[in-house]
Image (cartoon, rainbow, N blue to C red):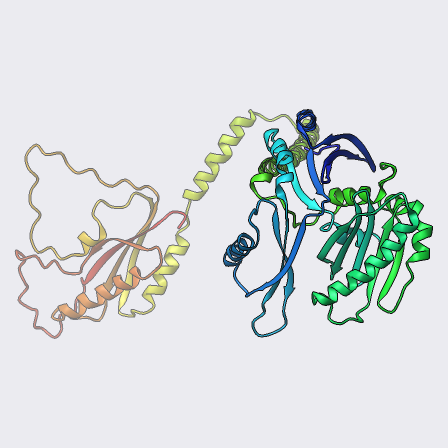
Length: 529
Protein backbone atom coordinates (compact mmCIF):
# COMPACT_ATOMS: atom_id res chain seq x y z
CA UNK A 1 0.00 0.00 0.00
CA UNK A 2 1.52 3.34 -1.05
CA UNK A 3 1.92 6.04 1.57
CA UNK A 4 0.96 9.62 0.78
CA UNK A 5 3.62 11.22 3.01
CA UNK A 6 7.19 10.52 4.03
CA UNK A 7 8.40 11.57 7.46
CA UNK A 8 11.87 13.12 7.62
CA UNK A 9 13.60 13.48 10.96
CA UNK A 10 16.46 15.99 11.11
CA UNK A 11 18.69 15.42 14.14
CA UNK A 12 21.31 17.86 15.39
CA UNK A 13 23.29 17.86 18.64
CA UNK A 14 20.44 19.07 20.88
CA UNK A 15 17.29 19.03 18.77
CA UNK A 16 15.22 16.84 16.47
CA UNK A 17 12.89 18.36 13.89
CA UNK A 18 10.15 16.31 12.18
CA UNK A 19 9.17 17.13 8.59
CA UNK A 20 6.51 15.84 6.19
CA UNK A 21 7.21 15.54 2.47
CA UNK A 22 4.24 15.27 0.14
CA UNK A 23 3.78 16.44 -3.45
CA UNK A 24 6.87 18.65 -3.44
CA UNK A 25 6.06 20.34 -0.14
CA UNK A 26 8.41 20.00 2.83
CA UNK A 27 6.57 21.05 5.99
CA UNK A 28 7.88 21.23 9.56
CA UNK A 29 5.55 19.15 11.75
CA UNK A 30 7.18 19.67 15.13
CA UNK A 31 10.47 20.24 16.96
CA UNK A 32 11.67 18.27 19.99
CA UNK A 33 14.39 19.15 22.48
CA UNK A 34 16.66 16.48 23.90
CA UNK A 35 15.08 16.24 27.33
CA UNK A 36 12.41 14.18 29.01
CA UNK A 37 9.51 16.34 27.85
CA UNK A 38 10.85 16.48 24.31
CA UNK A 39 11.28 12.69 24.16
CA UNK A 40 7.74 12.18 25.52
CA UNK A 41 6.34 14.57 22.90
CA UNK A 42 8.36 12.78 20.19
CA UNK A 43 6.98 9.41 21.28
CA UNK A 44 3.45 10.81 21.12
CA UNK A 45 4.15 12.19 17.64
CA UNK A 46 5.31 8.78 16.43
CA UNK A 47 2.19 7.09 17.76
CA UNK A 48 -0.06 9.14 15.50
CA UNK A 49 1.18 7.80 12.15
CA UNK A 50 2.37 4.61 10.45
CA UNK A 51 4.54 6.14 7.74
CA UNK A 52 8.11 5.61 6.56
CA UNK A 53 10.74 7.53 8.50
CA UNK A 54 14.14 8.77 7.36
CA UNK A 55 16.57 9.96 10.02
CA UNK A 56 19.11 12.54 8.77
CA UNK A 57 21.91 13.36 11.24
CA UNK A 58 24.08 16.49 11.20
CA UNK A 59 26.54 16.43 14.12
CA UNK A 60 30.19 17.18 14.67
CA UNK A 61 31.17 13.75 16.01
CA UNK A 62 31.90 11.86 12.80
CA UNK A 63 34.83 9.61 11.97
CA UNK A 64 36.05 8.42 8.55
CA UNK A 65 38.87 5.93 8.01
CA UNK A 66 40.07 4.35 4.78
CA UNK A 67 41.57 0.86 4.71
CA UNK A 68 42.20 -2.02 2.31
CA UNK A 69 41.16 -5.64 2.57
CA UNK A 70 42.01 -8.58 0.27
CA UNK A 71 39.59 -9.79 -2.36
CA UNK A 72 37.19 -12.14 -0.56
CA UNK A 73 33.94 -13.99 -1.10
CA UNK A 74 30.73 -12.38 0.10
CA UNK A 75 30.51 -14.30 3.38
CA UNK A 76 34.19 -13.87 4.27
CA UNK A 77 34.09 -10.20 3.32
CA UNK A 78 31.12 -9.60 5.62
CA UNK A 79 32.93 -11.26 8.51
CA UNK A 80 36.16 -9.32 7.90
CA UNK A 81 34.32 -5.99 7.71
CA UNK A 82 32.43 -6.72 10.94
CA UNK A 83 35.72 -7.55 12.70
CA UNK A 84 37.41 -4.39 11.34
CA UNK A 85 34.53 -2.20 12.55
CA UNK A 86 34.58 -3.83 15.98
CA UNK A 87 38.35 -3.24 16.24
CA UNK A 88 38.11 0.43 15.34
CA UNK A 89 34.87 1.48 17.08
CA UNK A 90 33.81 0.60 20.58
CA UNK A 91 30.10 1.02 19.72
CA UNK A 92 29.09 -0.46 16.34
CA UNK A 93 25.37 0.29 16.58
CA UNK A 94 25.73 3.13 14.03
CA UNK A 95 28.52 2.20 11.63
CA UNK A 96 28.93 1.45 7.95
CA UNK A 97 31.54 0.21 5.51
CA UNK A 98 31.57 1.75 2.04
CA UNK A 99 33.39 0.09 -0.85
CA UNK A 100 35.60 2.50 -2.82
CA UNK A 101 36.56 0.07 -5.55
CA UNK A 102 39.57 -2.17 -6.14
CA UNK A 103 43.22 -1.37 -6.52
CA UNK A 104 44.82 -2.12 -9.86
CA UNK A 105 47.28 -4.95 -9.39
CA UNK A 106 47.70 -8.67 -9.04
CA UNK A 107 46.14 -8.91 -5.58
CA UNK A 108 43.10 -6.70 -6.36
CA UNK A 109 42.79 -5.35 -2.83
CA UNK A 110 39.49 -3.63 -2.08
CA UNK A 111 39.50 -0.07 -0.75
CA UNK A 112 36.95 0.39 2.04
CA UNK A 113 35.82 3.49 3.94
CA UNK A 114 34.75 2.94 7.54
CA UNK A 115 32.43 5.55 9.02
CA UNK A 116 30.78 6.00 12.41
CA UNK A 117 29.61 8.57 14.92
CA UNK A 118 32.03 9.12 17.79
CA UNK A 119 29.35 9.81 20.37
CA UNK A 120 26.42 7.46 19.70
CA UNK A 121 24.88 7.88 23.16
CA UNK A 122 23.19 11.09 22.04
CA UNK A 123 21.15 9.11 19.48
CA UNK A 124 20.03 6.30 21.74
CA UNK A 125 16.95 8.06 23.32
CA UNK A 126 15.59 8.92 19.88
CA UNK A 127 16.29 5.42 18.50
CA UNK A 128 14.67 3.86 21.56
CA UNK A 129 11.51 5.92 20.97
CA UNK A 130 11.46 4.76 17.34
CA UNK A 131 11.80 1.12 18.40
CA UNK A 132 9.19 1.44 21.15
CA UNK A 133 6.61 2.74 18.68
CA UNK A 134 7.54 0.11 16.07
CA UNK A 135 8.41 2.77 13.53
CA UNK A 136 9.34 1.75 10.01
CA UNK A 137 12.81 3.28 9.94
CA UNK A 138 14.20 3.25 6.41
CA UNK A 139 17.68 4.26 7.52
CA UNK A 140 19.99 6.66 9.34
CA UNK A 141 21.85 9.02 7.01
CA UNK A 142 24.45 11.64 7.68
CA UNK A 143 24.55 14.80 5.61
CA UNK A 144 27.96 13.63 4.33
CA UNK A 145 26.40 10.49 2.83
CA UNK A 146 23.86 12.66 1.01
CA UNK A 147 26.49 15.03 -0.43
CA UNK A 148 27.01 13.00 -3.68
CA UNK A 149 23.26 13.19 -4.38
CA UNK A 150 23.32 17.02 -4.02
CA UNK A 151 26.33 17.32 -6.33
CA UNK A 152 24.61 15.12 -8.91
CA UNK A 153 21.39 17.14 -8.55
CA UNK A 154 23.32 20.33 -9.32
CA UNK A 155 24.65 18.63 -12.50
CA UNK A 156 28.24 19.31 -11.50
CA UNK A 157 30.35 16.65 -13.20
CA UNK A 158 33.77 16.51 -11.59
CA UNK A 159 35.90 13.54 -10.49
CA UNK A 160 36.85 15.41 -7.28
CA UNK A 161 34.42 17.80 -5.68
CA UNK A 162 34.25 19.57 -2.33
CA UNK A 163 30.71 20.40 -1.21
CA UNK A 164 30.63 23.40 1.14
CA UNK A 165 27.14 23.99 2.59
CA UNK A 166 26.06 26.74 4.98
CA UNK A 167 23.58 25.10 7.36
CA UNK A 168 22.00 25.86 10.72
CA UNK A 169 24.63 23.76 12.49
CA UNK A 170 27.53 25.53 10.77
CA UNK A 171 29.80 25.16 7.78
CA UNK A 172 29.73 21.56 6.44
CA UNK A 173 32.60 20.46 4.14
CA UNK A 174 32.29 17.08 2.39
CA UNK A 175 34.92 15.76 0.00
CA UNK A 176 33.50 13.50 -2.75
CA UNK A 177 35.63 11.50 -5.18
CA UNK A 178 34.15 9.47 -8.06
CA UNK A 179 30.67 9.92 -6.63
CA UNK A 180 31.52 8.55 -3.14
CA UNK A 181 32.13 10.37 0.12
CA UNK A 182 35.73 10.28 1.37
CA UNK A 183 35.83 12.83 4.19
CA UNK A 184 33.56 15.33 5.95
CA UNK A 185 33.74 17.81 8.81
CA UNK A 186 31.74 20.70 10.24
CA UNK A 187 32.82 24.06 11.63
CA UNK A 188 31.07 26.71 13.69
CA UNK A 189 29.90 29.95 12.03
CA UNK A 190 28.19 33.16 12.87
CA UNK A 191 25.33 32.99 10.44
CA UNK A 192 24.43 36.63 11.06
CA UNK A 193 27.66 37.87 9.41
CA UNK A 194 27.37 37.27 5.66
CA UNK A 195 30.89 38.59 4.95
CA UNK A 196 32.35 36.33 7.66
CA UNK A 197 30.49 33.36 6.24
CA UNK A 198 31.87 34.05 2.76
CA UNK A 199 35.43 34.50 4.04
CA UNK A 200 35.16 31.28 6.04
CA UNK A 201 34.03 29.36 2.96
CA UNK A 202 37.04 30.55 0.97
CA UNK A 203 39.63 30.04 3.70
CA UNK A 204 38.31 26.72 4.99
CA UNK A 205 38.21 25.33 1.44
CA UNK A 206 41.90 26.12 0.95
CA UNK A 207 42.77 24.70 4.37
CA UNK A 208 40.82 21.46 3.66
CA UNK A 209 42.61 21.05 0.34
CA UNK A 210 45.97 21.10 2.16
CA UNK A 211 44.64 18.62 4.72
CA UNK A 212 43.53 16.21 1.98
CA UNK A 213 47.02 16.36 0.50
CA UNK A 214 48.50 15.62 3.93
CA UNK A 215 46.16 12.64 4.42
CA UNK A 216 47.10 11.41 0.89
CA UNK A 217 43.53 11.61 -0.27
CA UNK A 218 44.82 13.80 -3.13
CA UNK A 219 47.67 12.53 -5.31
CA UNK A 220 49.54 15.88 -5.38
CA UNK A 221 49.42 19.36 -3.88
CA UNK A 222 48.45 20.96 -7.17
CA UNK A 223 45.58 18.57 -7.87
CA UNK A 224 42.57 20.70 -8.90
CA UNK A 225 39.32 20.40 -6.99
CA UNK A 226 35.87 21.72 -7.90
CA UNK A 227 34.27 23.45 -4.91
CA UNK A 228 30.48 23.62 -4.88
CA UNK A 229 29.37 26.31 -2.41
CA UNK A 230 25.73 25.90 -1.41
CA UNK A 231 24.14 28.65 0.69
CA UNK A 232 20.92 30.60 1.10
CA UNK A 233 20.15 33.57 -1.10
CA UNK A 234 21.29 36.22 1.41
CA UNK A 235 24.88 34.91 1.22
CA UNK A 236 25.07 34.66 -2.55
CA UNK A 237 26.58 38.10 -3.28
CA UNK A 238 29.19 37.85 -0.51
CA UNK A 239 30.15 34.32 -1.52
CA UNK A 240 30.55 35.32 -5.17
CA UNK A 241 32.89 38.14 -4.10
CA UNK A 242 34.97 36.08 -1.65
CA UNK A 243 35.23 32.73 -3.42
CA UNK A 244 37.57 33.36 -6.32
CA UNK A 245 38.81 30.40 -8.38
CA UNK A 246 42.49 29.52 -8.51
CA UNK A 247 44.63 26.86 -10.16
CA UNK A 248 43.74 24.41 -7.39
CA UNK A 249 40.24 25.44 -6.32
CA UNK A 250 37.48 26.06 -8.86
CA UNK A 251 34.50 27.57 -7.04
CA UNK A 252 30.85 27.12 -8.10
CA UNK A 253 28.51 29.26 -6.00
CA UNK A 254 24.94 27.94 -6.07
CA UNK A 255 21.86 29.60 -4.60
CA UNK A 256 20.26 27.00 -2.32
CA UNK A 257 16.78 28.57 -2.66
CA UNK A 258 16.95 28.26 -6.45
CA UNK A 259 18.35 24.74 -6.19
CA UNK A 260 15.43 23.68 -3.96
CA UNK A 261 12.93 24.73 -6.57
CA UNK A 262 14.98 23.07 -9.32
CA UNK A 263 14.94 19.82 -7.29
CA UNK A 264 11.13 19.89 -7.15
CA UNK A 265 10.52 21.49 -3.75
CA UNK A 266 7.79 24.02 -4.32
CA UNK A 267 7.61 24.76 -0.59
CA UNK A 268 10.28 24.37 2.10
CA UNK A 269 11.06 25.89 5.52
CA UNK A 270 12.38 29.45 5.16
CA UNK A 271 15.89 30.14 6.40
CA UNK A 272 17.10 26.54 5.95
CA UNK A 273 17.27 25.77 2.22
CA UNK A 274 20.46 23.68 2.55
CA UNK A 275 18.89 21.50 5.25
CA UNK A 276 15.80 21.15 3.04
CA UNK A 277 17.97 19.91 0.14
CA UNK A 278 19.59 17.24 2.34
CA UNK A 279 16.19 16.07 3.59
CA UNK A 280 14.78 15.96 0.07
CA UNK A 281 17.80 13.95 -1.12
CA UNK A 282 17.24 11.44 1.71
CA UNK A 283 13.63 10.93 0.64
CA UNK A 284 14.15 10.82 -3.13
CA UNK A 285 17.75 9.67 -3.74
CA UNK A 286 18.82 7.88 -0.57
CA UNK A 287 22.00 5.83 -1.05
CA UNK A 288 22.08 2.12 -0.33
CA UNK A 289 24.64 2.65 2.46
CA UNK A 290 23.36 3.97 5.79
CA UNK A 291 24.25 3.72 9.47
CA UNK A 292 21.28 1.82 10.93
CA UNK A 293 21.71 -1.89 11.68
CA UNK A 294 19.29 -4.70 10.89
CA UNK A 295 17.61 -4.72 14.32
CA UNK A 296 16.90 -0.99 14.04
CA UNK A 297 15.25 -1.49 10.61
CA UNK A 298 13.32 -4.61 11.63
CA UNK A 299 9.84 -3.14 11.27
CA UNK A 300 10.72 -1.56 7.92
CA UNK A 301 11.96 -4.93 6.62
CA UNK A 302 8.72 -6.57 7.79
CA UNK A 303 6.83 -3.87 5.90
CA UNK A 304 8.90 -4.63 2.79
CA UNK A 305 8.10 -8.33 3.08
CA UNK A 306 4.38 -7.65 3.53
CA UNK A 307 4.43 -5.32 0.52
CA UNK A 308 6.20 -8.00 -1.50
CA UNK A 309 3.57 -10.56 -0.55
CA UNK A 310 0.83 -8.07 -1.31
CA UNK A 311 2.36 -7.33 -4.70
CA UNK A 312 2.70 -11.05 -5.43
CA UNK A 313 -0.93 -11.61 -4.41
CA UNK A 314 -2.04 -8.74 -6.62
CA UNK A 315 -0.02 -10.17 -9.50
CA UNK A 316 -1.68 -13.56 -9.03
CA UNK A 317 -5.08 -11.89 -8.76
CA UNK A 318 -4.53 -9.84 -11.91
CA UNK A 319 -3.28 -12.95 -13.72
CA UNK A 320 -6.42 -14.78 -12.63
CA UNK A 321 -8.57 -11.91 -13.86
CA UNK A 322 -6.80 -11.90 -17.20
CA UNK A 323 -7.18 -15.66 -17.50
CA UNK A 324 -10.86 -15.41 -16.57
CA UNK A 325 -11.28 -12.64 -19.13
CA UNK A 326 -9.70 -14.80 -21.83
CA UNK A 327 -11.97 -17.70 -20.87
CA UNK A 328 -15.06 -15.46 -20.93
CA UNK A 329 -14.03 -14.16 -24.33
CA UNK A 330 -13.65 -17.75 -25.57
CA UNK A 331 -17.07 -18.65 -24.15
CA UNK A 332 -18.57 -15.59 -25.82
CA UNK A 333 -17.03 -16.56 -29.18
CA UNK A 334 -18.20 -20.17 -28.72
CA UNK A 335 -21.75 -19.06 -28.02
CA UNK A 336 -21.68 -16.84 -31.07
CA UNK A 337 -20.43 -19.79 -33.14
CA UNK A 338 -23.18 -22.02 -31.72
CA UNK A 339 -25.77 -19.38 -32.51
CA UNK A 340 -24.40 -19.00 -36.03
CA UNK A 341 -24.40 -22.78 -36.55
CA UNK A 342 -27.95 -23.02 -35.21
CA UNK A 343 -29.08 -20.29 -37.57
CA UNK A 344 -27.39 -22.07 -40.47
CA UNK A 345 -28.96 -25.38 -39.42
CA UNK A 346 -32.41 -23.80 -39.27
CA UNK A 347 -31.91 -22.32 -42.73
CA UNK A 348 -30.76 -25.67 -44.16
CA UNK A 349 -33.69 -27.47 -42.49
CA UNK A 350 -36.11 -24.96 -43.94
CA UNK A 351 -34.56 -25.39 -47.38
CA UNK A 352 -34.72 -29.18 -47.03
CA UNK A 353 -38.39 -28.99 -46.03
CA UNK A 354 -39.09 -26.70 -48.97
CA UNK A 355 -37.39 -29.06 -51.43
CA UNK A 356 -38.97 -32.23 -50.04
CA UNK A 357 -42.39 -30.60 -50.19
CA UNK A 358 -42.15 -30.71 -54.00
CA UNK A 359 -41.49 -34.50 -54.04
CA UNK A 360 -44.37 -36.81 -55.06
CA UNK A 361 -46.00 -38.61 -52.15
CA UNK A 362 -44.15 -41.77 -51.10
CA UNK A 363 -46.06 -45.07 -50.71
CA UNK A 364 -44.66 -45.53 -47.20
CA UNK A 365 -43.00 -43.63 -44.42
CA UNK A 366 -39.39 -42.42 -44.33
CA UNK A 367 -38.52 -44.89 -41.56
CA UNK A 368 -39.72 -47.80 -43.68
CA UNK A 369 -37.69 -46.56 -46.63
CA UNK A 370 -34.57 -46.36 -44.47
CA UNK A 371 -35.14 -49.90 -43.21
CA UNK A 372 -35.65 -51.14 -46.76
CA UNK A 373 -32.48 -49.49 -47.99
CA UNK A 374 -30.54 -51.01 -45.10
CA UNK A 375 -31.84 -54.50 -45.85
CA UNK A 376 -31.15 -54.02 -49.55
CA UNK A 377 -27.53 -53.13 -48.81
CA UNK A 378 -27.22 -56.19 -46.57
CA UNK A 379 -28.60 -58.43 -49.35
CA UNK A 380 -26.33 -56.75 -51.87
CA UNK A 381 -23.30 -57.58 -49.76
CA UNK A 382 -24.42 -61.22 -49.47
CA UNK A 383 -25.07 -61.56 -53.22
CA UNK A 384 -22.13 -62.98 -55.16
CA UNK A 385 -21.25 -64.08 -58.72
CA UNK A 386 -19.31 -67.30 -59.49
CA UNK A 387 -17.19 -65.52 -62.06
CA UNK A 388 -14.45 -64.43 -59.67
CA UNK A 389 -14.23 -67.81 -57.94
CA UNK A 390 -14.16 -69.67 -61.27
CA UNK A 391 -11.44 -67.37 -62.60
CA UNK A 392 -9.21 -68.09 -59.62
CA UNK A 393 -9.76 -71.86 -59.98
CA UNK A 394 -8.85 -71.55 -63.66
CA UNK A 395 -5.58 -69.77 -62.78
CA UNK A 396 -4.67 -72.55 -60.37
CA UNK A 397 -5.61 -75.18 -62.98
CA UNK A 398 -3.31 -73.63 -65.62
CA UNK A 399 -0.25 -75.11 -63.94
CA UNK A 400 -1.60 -78.70 -63.97
CA UNK A 401 -2.25 -79.95 -67.53
CA UNK A 402 -2.88 -83.52 -66.31
CA UNK A 403 -5.83 -82.37 -64.19
CA UNK A 404 -9.12 -82.22 -66.07
CA UNK A 405 -12.23 -80.56 -64.64
CA UNK A 406 -15.38 -82.62 -65.08
CA UNK A 407 -17.88 -80.58 -63.12
CA UNK A 408 -18.09 -77.54 -60.81
CA UNK A 409 -21.04 -77.09 -58.50
CA UNK A 410 -21.36 -73.51 -57.21
CA UNK A 411 -23.72 -72.32 -54.51
CA UNK A 412 -24.05 -69.77 -51.66
CA UNK A 413 -24.71 -71.11 -48.21
CA UNK A 414 -23.21 -72.77 -45.19
CA UNK A 415 -19.87 -74.58 -45.40
CA UNK A 416 -19.88 -78.37 -45.02
CA UNK A 417 -19.76 -79.80 -41.53
CA UNK A 418 -16.33 -81.43 -41.94
CA UNK A 419 -13.34 -79.07 -41.87
CA UNK A 420 -10.97 -79.10 -44.79
CA UNK A 421 -8.06 -80.35 -42.69
CA UNK A 422 -10.05 -83.33 -41.37
CA UNK A 423 -11.36 -84.28 -44.80
CA UNK A 424 -7.92 -83.92 -46.43
CA UNK A 425 -6.21 -86.23 -43.93
CA UNK A 426 -6.11 -89.97 -44.89
CA UNK A 427 -8.48 -92.07 -42.93
CA UNK A 428 -6.06 -94.17 -40.88
CA UNK A 429 -8.83 -95.59 -38.71
CA UNK A 430 -12.56 -95.61 -38.67
CA UNK A 431 -14.15 -92.95 -36.46
CA UNK A 432 -15.26 -94.11 -33.05
CA UNK A 433 -18.97 -94.48 -32.68
CA UNK A 434 -20.73 -91.91 -30.56
CA UNK A 435 -21.66 -92.88 -27.05
CA UNK A 436 -25.22 -93.94 -26.54
CA UNK A 437 -27.42 -91.07 -25.60
CA UNK A 438 -24.77 -88.42 -26.34
CA UNK A 439 -26.08 -85.44 -28.37
CA UNK A 440 -24.74 -84.94 -31.82
CA UNK A 441 -22.32 -82.04 -32.34
CA UNK A 442 -23.97 -79.04 -33.88
CA UNK A 443 -22.46 -78.02 -37.19
CA UNK A 444 -20.74 -74.64 -37.44
CA UNK A 445 -23.24 -72.28 -38.98
CA UNK A 446 -21.68 -69.72 -41.29
CA UNK A 447 -24.09 -68.69 -44.07
CA UNK A 448 -21.72 -66.07 -45.45
CA UNK A 449 -19.85 -68.31 -47.95
CA UNK A 450 -19.86 -68.91 -51.68
CA UNK A 451 -18.93 -72.54 -52.22
CA UNK A 452 -17.60 -74.48 -55.23
CA UNK A 453 -17.30 -78.26 -55.36
CA UNK A 454 -14.73 -79.09 -58.08
CA UNK A 455 -14.91 -82.62 -59.51
CA UNK A 456 -11.76 -83.47 -61.53
CA UNK A 457 -9.63 -86.40 -62.61
CA UNK A 458 -5.96 -87.03 -63.36
CA UNK A 459 -5.59 -88.07 -67.00
CA UNK A 460 -2.79 -90.15 -68.50
CA UNK A 461 -1.89 -91.81 -65.19
CA UNK A 462 -1.67 -95.56 -64.48
CA UNK A 463 -3.23 -97.28 -61.56
CA UNK A 464 0.13 -98.68 -60.49
CA UNK A 465 1.47 -95.16 -60.03
CA UNK A 466 -0.53 -94.34 -56.87
CA UNK A 467 2.12 -92.01 -55.49
CA UNK A 468 2.19 -89.88 -58.64
CA UNK A 469 -1.61 -89.56 -58.67
CA UNK A 470 -1.71 -88.63 -54.98
CA UNK A 471 1.13 -86.04 -55.34
CA UNK A 472 -0.59 -84.45 -58.34
CA UNK A 473 -3.84 -84.15 -56.38
CA UNK A 474 -2.07 -82.67 -53.35
CA UNK A 475 -0.18 -80.15 -55.47
CA UNK A 476 -3.41 -78.98 -57.07
CA UNK A 477 -5.03 -78.58 -53.65
CA UNK A 478 -1.94 -76.67 -52.41
CA UNK A 479 -2.20 -74.31 -55.39
CA UNK A 480 -5.82 -73.58 -54.46
CA UNK A 481 -4.77 -72.84 -50.87
CA UNK A 482 -2.35 -70.18 -52.05
CA UNK A 483 -5.17 -68.12 -53.51
CA UNK A 484 -5.85 -65.16 -51.15
CA UNK A 485 -8.96 -65.56 -48.95
CA UNK A 486 -9.58 -69.03 -50.37
CA UNK A 487 -10.46 -71.79 -47.91
CA UNK A 488 -10.28 -75.55 -48.56
CA UNK A 489 -13.40 -76.94 -46.95
CA UNK A 490 -13.25 -80.54 -48.15
CA UNK A 491 -11.04 -82.91 -50.20
CA UNK A 492 -11.83 -86.44 -51.49
CA UNK A 493 -8.78 -88.28 -52.83
CA UNK A 494 -8.82 -90.61 -55.92
CA UNK A 495 -8.27 -93.77 -53.81
CA UNK A 496 -9.75 -95.01 -50.62
CA UNK A 497 -6.66 -96.27 -48.77
CA UNK A 498 -8.28 -97.55 -45.64
CA UNK A 499 -6.82 -100.78 -44.16
CA UNK A 500 -9.94 -102.83 -44.87
CA UNK A 501 -9.88 -102.18 -48.66
CA UNK A 502 -8.91 -104.90 -51.18
CA UNK A 503 -6.43 -104.20 -53.98
CA UNK A 504 -7.28 -105.43 -57.51
CA UNK A 505 -5.17 -108.17 -59.18
CA UNK A 506 -4.38 -106.28 -62.43
CA UNK A 507 -2.32 -103.45 -60.87
CA UNK A 508 0.75 -104.54 -62.75
CA UNK A 509 -0.83 -104.41 -66.23
CA UNK A 510 0.68 -101.85 -68.57
CA UNK A 511 -2.74 -101.19 -70.13
CA UNK A 512 -4.41 -100.43 -66.84
CA UNK A 513 -4.80 -96.69 -67.25
CA UNK A 514 -6.74 -95.16 -64.46
CA UNK A 515 -10.07 -94.06 -65.74
CA UNK A 516 -11.58 -93.50 -62.34
CA UNK A 517 -8.69 -91.52 -60.69
CA UNK A 518 -11.13 -88.84 -59.79
CA UNK A 519 -11.02 -86.49 -56.82
CA UNK A 520 -13.25 -83.80 -55.41
CA UNK A 521 -12.25 -80.49 -53.79
CA UNK A 522 -14.67 -78.17 -52.01
CA UNK A 523 -13.44 -74.55 -51.79
CA UNK A 524 -15.09 -71.52 -50.27
CA UNK A 525 -14.77 -67.76 -49.96
CA UNK A 526 -16.50 -65.50 -47.49
CA UNK A 527 -19.02 -63.15 -49.01
CA UNK A 528 -17.66 -59.62 -49.29
CA UNK A 529 -14.06 -60.92 -49.17
